Length: 570
Ligand code: HEM
Image 1 (spheres, rainbow, N blue to C red):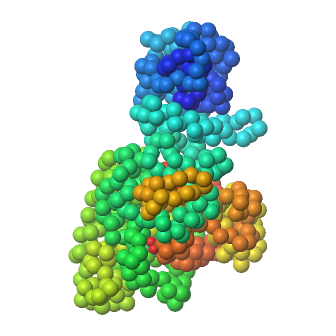
Image 2: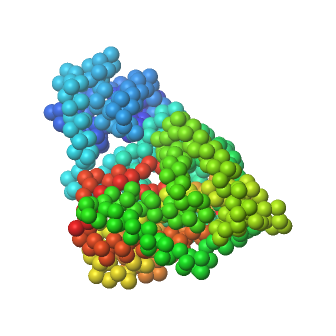
Image 3: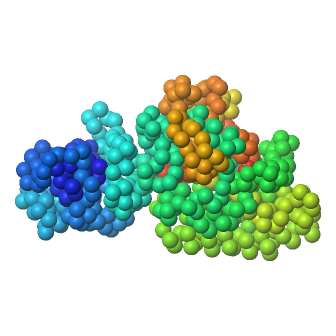
């Protein structure tokens, strides 16, 4: 929208875009929240545009676009941002612009709207009503369109000339926009088609969206892991990528952030817990946990999938595997929740402080409760790892702690989201649910398709170890590369009809667990948990139905999943 405003101003030969250019941009997108608000207040968009056009200043010969925003535009955007904040919204949309226009009567454009009858209460009522209806933006064909889908990202480059606004409105807020959060795939598709190897104009990162490029990034040793690379990013980007300095430091010895040979040493010791034999021994425990969780809700005929099953199941399993006392489950759940809250895109400073506190408490717990296990040998992963401490090729205490936290975090949220995203996809594609009910042996390929279609992990990163060519672009050594697994998994050059959810899909080589030396250590465990949970749901509740009104997707670039999923079981 700001790009369009800059173009509107440029067309009139202006060097800066004013408030009226922003309003023209809002009117131009007839499906924008602002345009819808105006129409609902009885204004005709063409008439509004014509009247603004009549006084929008012309200042010399036309140019491609204006260079920056002038103070009236900044005032309008600031007022819109405050209105969004006042309403508790995580994004700034054009609806907030329409909302504040009548209040800005010191601006010419504000006076114009007042004269045309757009009063503050009318705008307020229209916006509230539209939000309550779920912010519909039908383009007449029933298709949803809007800001992010329409955004031509190359235009964002121009925003570099107004970086503060660029950050605030687009990077920080737009990725928290409900449309991107609920469905990032149109934006991925746009990137993959137009600029599959893209140097981001707003951040010192490269973005890969094609399958082959993401797979190369994951497999090729020229791409390194570097826990400190993220530290070089501007603060806001770091927050976007879920990488606060705290987190980066304490992850320094986590295998996920190391290259061979340290990676190989740590991974091979932890891998002992994930042999086929160890996992087979866990099967009956996972079945029992699932059965108990479903028994708890059976009589009520209803469940909230995430809280009742998808969330607790992987925590119980990983806590048990690590050998942490099961009775402390609630503590792990709280610490894990608090650490996860700081990963949200809209996380506030207090969330980061709470997360750091949770990590400290976990560390304290580890020292008090877990370390003494060394003297009480038991058949748990932790006690076996502690035995290697101080031995050649063994692990340090710090390595055991960091990698146990990694298992707790990596093995938890991701698996919760695999089960959650799976049930969402199956409920939204009822024919596929019916096929699974009719043929439960399809559960293995169904889980693979869920992983591909809506991966719980959407992005991962590397650092270039040397100068290289990729997708016709030259990337220097030491650059940060973000590989979009979610986009790679829908690359039509690899998957036929990639936007279709098809539980019978063959040759499904998705990248949801990564590939190469960092291939997910818990992949087999996650698959088993999801297969067992889904098998039990189809067997016990073939008529199961989603009863919610609107899906509530979590914000955050890395993980993808819903917060709640209410279901009627029969
Ligand atoms: C659906 C569930 C899961 C998904 C989608 C997932 C995804 C991933 C991905 C994409 C990576 C590679 C990241 C990279 O290369 O940068 C990874 C690594 C890892 N995952 Fe998972 N994961 C899941 C479940 C689990 C579980 C259940 C555990 C353990 C209990 C686990 C433990 C790990 C570990 C330890 C690594 C690091 C491996 C290494 O660096 O060598 N994950 N996971």
